Structures are given as C-alpha cells and as structure tokens.
Length: 234
Image 1 (cartoon, rainbow, N blue to C red):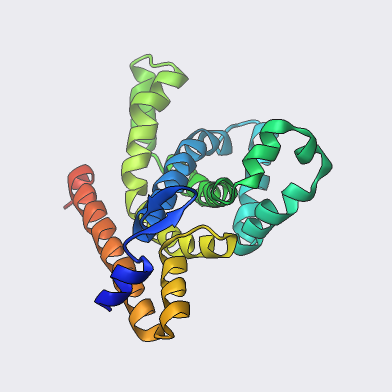
Image 2 (cartoon, rainbow, N blue to C red):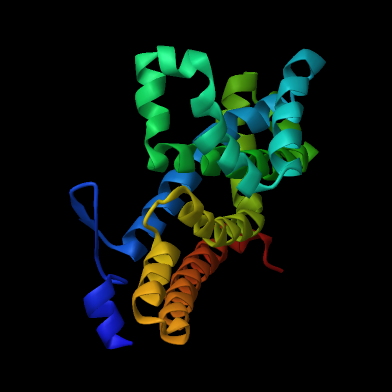
C-alpha cells in the first residue's frame, strides 16, 4: 500500500502543470461546490418563501429539476452536452469555461447541492417561530432587517444538522468527478489499480481517506451544533 502511495500518486498527481493531491482535489471540489452552493441557496431560499408566486415558481422549478434528476446525468449534460451548442463555441468566455473539466464539474456540483440546500434553508425559514417574527415587528424592524438579524441566523442554526448531512453526501458525490477526467481521489486510486492490478490496496486506501474526511466533517459539525444549538437543549 505504501508503494502505491509513493509510486502512483494517492499522494500527488501531475495535472495541467501542477502537482495536485487526489485528496486535495476532492477537498477542493467539496469546498468550492458547497461554498458556492451555500451562497446560491441563501437568496433562493428567501425567494422560495416569497409571497408572490412569480418569484416562488422559478425557484421551485430549479430545485425540482436538480433534485429530480441524477447528479451523474447533470454532470454529463454540462460537461459533454453544453459544449456541443453553437452559441457556446461562438462565445469566447463560454468556450473557455466549458472546455475545462474542472469548471464543468464544479458547476454541476454547485447547482445540485444548491438545489438541495435551498430546500433545506427554505424549510428552516418557514419553521421560524411566529413569536420571533412578532417580536421583530413589534420593535419596528423592517422586513430586510428582520431577515438579516432574526430569521436567517435562527434558520441557519436550526438547519445545521440537516445541512451537515448534505455536505457529507456531497463529499460522496465528488467521486463522480472521475467520469469528467478530474483527478480526484477516486481517479488516482483507479490509476493506481490500473498500474498495479491490486484493487484491494488501491481502493481500500481511498475508502479510508474518504472515511477520515467524513469523520472530520462530522466532528466539526457536531461541535458547531453543540455551540449554536445549545439554546434548544432541555
């Protein structure tokens, strides 16, 4: 197993002129997709609870499409399908963007996790205590101030346990980057298997690394839950 690490790059892999660790690439995909998905989901969650159906419907349609289709299909459509469209080839920026496998992979991941996170946050916003809202209105807060100081902080705290599950699932979903030739942890493990014909060592080590990352994420989220949800404890 140690020879596999040294020789075939579960530690390092040369890709596009850079030495990139397979584990580091997996973590980078996770951070980018979850970070940008979070930023996308927060305003969409507010729009999902808007009074106007004109505002709610596009958000509902977005979450319905990306939650109702497999992530693998979405990745194939973005990585292979969009690049075949004429207007993508004719636009310099779009052409440069969709030529890069890493860009297509991150885009598909962030849209998928953004859809799930939108529904998580939207549900948490809907479950905000009426007493908190009434108190904010009684103090003369505007709707913007009420969302900024009362509703969003409270909803994010209560959504933390469910959101932690989404992050773990997103970590597992990063294995699909392998199909877009992105050198994540699974692709490097598969390269090691192809070179050594020793699947047990290559994939066992990959599984252990995924397990370690999952444990670190779970530990971090549990610490955050104990801190930010302490007021809900009996």
